[in-house]
Image 1: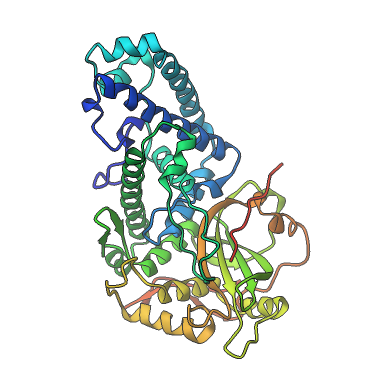
Image 2: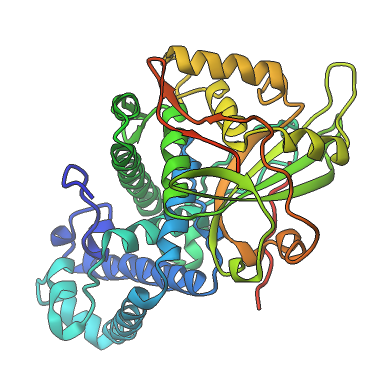
Length: 429
């Protein structure tokens, strides 16, 4: 990770204020704030150990869920060895903090004039938790998943998913936390995770050595004064290539909805790819069940005449499609930045966006597959994919003889020839 974006190097640095200013009576509130971070972090570690990757589906607010989907899946792929030491440190710190909050002990500390920073960084208390970049990403992603607000049942149905954050949901970790602190904490974590996500996209683009992709991901917007984001289309390009290079499977979840946008049926497709081969639909193996993947959810809607593809018709149509092109068409048709007033366009984006309208991957024509959410998941947590293991023959690859993946200035980036788990709960349409 480039030094241009600095991740929190300790849990203390996630606090939305200077810990050195919390003294005397404010020390008690500061220690309780810190206990919230400890408890969130312990739950994040447990979720990772259990393979509950969908619990790292952060609500950031910059329309970039695909970045965390790939990044968290990649982090989870590296195994759990590096997380055990963090878990032990968190448990020690939690026990130590509880003893410090004993009335006689805390009264003495508050009268000593020492700051929150002094107390946490005092090695005898074992409160200071050092973090790696990946540990920071996991904790911040988990925290921002915890604040997801329930959807308003009175809201009109929509094929898009608009999630809102409710910082007060973090009170389950510390009931005495103030609303002001929780709002500031969520804002700070959102800002930092969005900046780290942009850096991850740019480094992923740089790995391709594709100049146009590197240039496209250099375009940046600061949204709401604290969220950093890059255009959606080149972000998806970068994430597809990154996920393939790292051997991260892709799962497509299509929900067949009626005119009230109620799900009547659904289908799950499993795709594998590599550095030298695009994502192709394949049959999952039992050895794939512990793999981390990125899940792409979307809807299949009726056309203007009220006719919707049946699952059989849809599967037949998808056999002749490049899934990467389906994804990119949807990404091109989507607004590129969360602020609609910001215009971003290229010839390539315009071409893919037009194809989205023509082939059913657009908001105004969602008849084939309209993406409305992306998140990380463990393959074996998806019952429909588990049920496909060992069943049936391999599906046909894309029928086109040559598959052009990404291009710029008329020059394609590359060409390819076709050659014990509790389930997660899918989000409703």
